[in-house]
Length: 371
Ligand code: ATP
Ligand code: MG
Image 1 (cartoon, protein in one colour):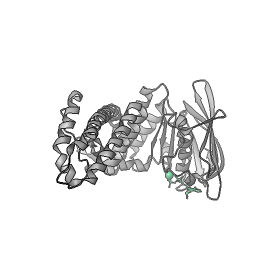
Image 2: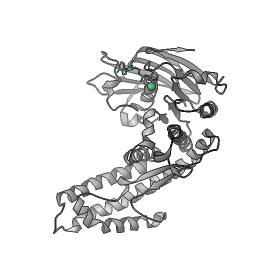
Image 3: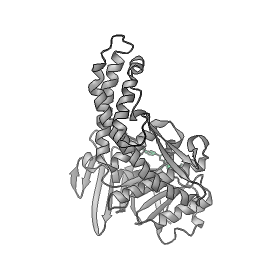
Image 4: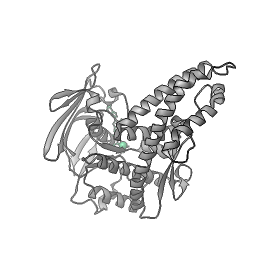
């Protein structure tokens, strides 16, 4: 699958722009603040019906405009279809596929797209909640059961926390009030943990090989799930371990007024040669790790469906040395799927790695020209 053409009207700093794309690699260069990221955002928005930068559609409207419209042609094998996405507040976002209106839920995540943006570095720089969100959004895109169990888990957790908060510090608390929520937490939480661990394992095996290539085999990447429920790795025994540890913590939970164990508090560690990247990784290493995770995700998408994911890489070369940049370009020009990348640095132009399999564009003040 690839995006063959895109028209933008009043999207971010674009007034009107018509573009056709290469089925493989598309490279957007330009100075800062010209519209490179905005263009990737438009591609993402057309493919997924939301932005990767904001939940506020009004931010996507070109300043002073009362609507935006994106239209594009996707090609799958020999078949072509047209998607139109329009927004005119106060109406909701409108989605049309070959002229037929679709609800957002029918369209969302129809196209496999993986995006790497500078914000993704938070994945290895920040606290655990951002890594849980990564596991949950990416894992549940690949597996609907994951999404359902996660939703059930968080609903039960909310109810349980409500009770613990209400009776916080009480000396005559009736623990049987927690029983139905304990059961739900154990049942749904064990599935969430199992799905996360499996997803992380699958991601690790793919990301490891990309990481090794990007670093010319000099560094090795590993990922380890860090559960708050201790268990020996046997999923058959997970529910009983969960129940035991939940029950053992009842009185502490009542004192604190909240649930103290479970996947809502779990994390995962990202390590290079056995050292935690968050604490010891250089900027370039952190970037390489996140990129390898994203490339691993692309592979997971590819093995889950028969369509190659579209890969969007924003501001990709900053902080990469020449060797890593070349490995990346080689990967992108060899991959079958379509990629879009932006860079403010012109140094890649000297590389021979992408010749023939790419189209190069210059972005200047919200206008795009093919080089
Ligand atoms: P950098 O290399 O610094 O990342 P960029 O080319 O990726 O730059 P963009 O993030 O695409 O730059 O933004 C380009 C410009 O778009 C910015 O100057 C910003 O002010 C402008 N912009 C953002 N949103 C809107 C909007 N809704 N309407 C008009 N202009 C906007
Ligand atoms: Mg940018």
